[in-house]
Image (cartoon, rainbow, N blue to C red; front, top):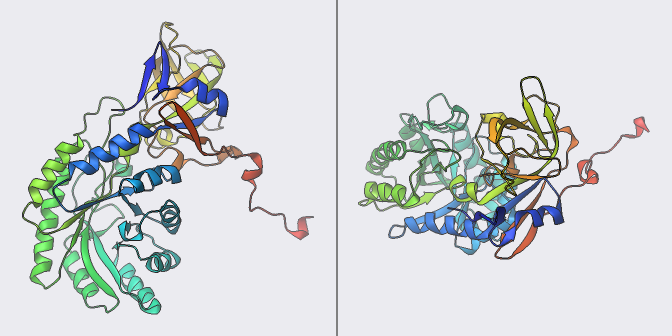
Length: 418
């Protein structure tokens, strides 16, 4: 459920016409609905009422400070994978004690920053990282709370690029090796074994992979308990999918009901890392048609948004709905929606039936609130889009559009080239 709807054939975000925002701030632009973000966070977090839990939004999904602040105001925490994401979380006012640090390649500087900040827990992913965290914590006179990210070898039935819980993936420590590595960690004086962590993939549309994983983790936790290790936190990661096209993912209530049923006898605090399920359908990418082009076998609608703005179609061949900002009623045509970048992979949709658009008309790329701006780049020296949030009948710029001057910020020509 989201707050992008047509009123008299014109697309609105809440009570604001999308065309008005585009007219005032330009295109391309990312447009988010405050009401949708709030509804989705509350729906997910509320689904786990009755059990001890902490909802840690996956910051890689959408790291805008205004969006993070919204979740902070709702009591949310954060799942980070870099020192930069920790900086963003703290800048947004997030409590350090509600932050977990994941990621397979944490830098020493990131470990130091997180220890100094007093985050809740590190989710470590290799024996070398366990030893490095112990070393860094010792030098700082700290004791680091940690969990091992376990790789359960469960097929999440999603795109291979966003599958993270199989033996072939780079993430985590194989569940068969985890007891041995936990024993090593428990014997290090600067670490406190506090949890078990797992994340099997993204855009999952079935509950069964989550439950299969949870059952494996419960067996591991019991085995660790028999070895004298107190496990307080069970981090189940994220991964719950959304509807881009015809997918029918479970509602957060259904997901939570199945999880709660499995852990009802366990004295654990659940850590949940939702991302896409909260922001995915809460944002759109608005773009303007520049030209139409009729080739021998193709029709192209050339727009001012490109793969540098939204890389998911090029990277994953992902589907995003395409809607006109103003419905014309013209008979639909089959066309490729492409951008200005000098790559054949620069497309937002291929062979899609859409209303014909004239130059200057606007279209909305739907379900762009997750892994949209956060994966954008300056390829072809294109300034990144602005981001806007609508609340009721007003809109607010939450990130200014980059300028050409921003593109060269930090660059310098050495004296020998003067």
